[in-house]
Image (cartoon, rainbow, N blue to C red):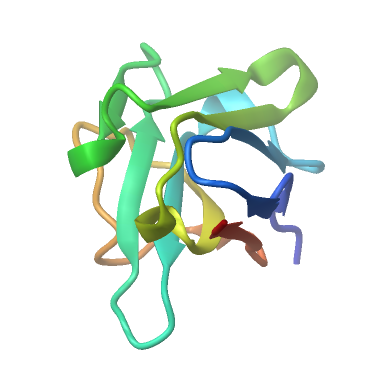
Length: 125
């Protein structure tokens, strides 16, 4: 079964930046809403940012607003999460998620059609 593939994670100092990429080979990306979710061991998975399928509306959760930017490149079947001013509490495994349904909000709960394997982000000095 095909699934999205994340990359771009790594170790960064507080205040630094990373850009996560989500490749979606085998998908027609403009048929999908895209979400970036993250999980810390022992905690529930949480939504970070989402972008809708049709009108590319974007949604951000909590403190990510103003620091993170989600984008999509349908022509190249790619999605991105630009993360700036990273904080230690941003440390987590980040997942790219694709859903056939339209997004009107961003939530990690419930069913999602396709998950990537995750990419680890560590923010530490």
